[in-house]
Length: 293
Image (cartoon, rainbow, N blue to C red; front, side):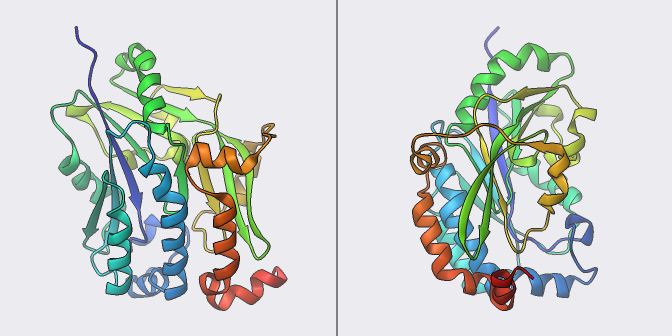
């Protein structure tokens, strides 16, 4: 029997104004949420992260056979929308999806994912990164390789998860950009879910911290595979995850070169751009960032 074929489908929710249950910190009023997400300083910050963190790693994937959806609201204002579309145009695998705003996140992706499945494949592999995350340049290639060994394990239930536990937290502050090694189980940017294509559900049907309730999972800890952002307008509270995380020994001869090789960005250039623009990114909160209040 021929080896099963696998489609890789990535998802990024890019400042999409959905129902309040889609965000940890949000207003029940859609107009208030929309104003917060589309605030000029926030848009500038998210476009900075998109250009210098998210897209470089996707553009340089060693296995280019994947599709990555960027899901935005259909009322994203024109100045940001045009800049976003121009940036996404630099990555052939990136697809812009402008969805009607105010939808329930789970329900929206239940309808959206089937529209982008390629029926000719046997298996659908889904992963997700937030708009302040990155994955290693061999994320697709390694996941495909590991699945070739994981396949008998997957066949028992027709579903399986791959959990990359090592990565970095990228912390930005008025002092600059720091990368802290972290080991954590079931963090969203380190997960891949493999399902039989005909029965595949949306990845958002499986809350990432409880994914082991729904499927067998394989933990892979050998190589750092993701970066997760920590900054002034995070939706998730990374500090609250401290009890679930550990660090690992990371002492390369040249940290900048390592990050360039693994994630395809120049950390020095990123720091310079951040320091030059953080007041624009932080807006009224810039003074608080300086004083720590």
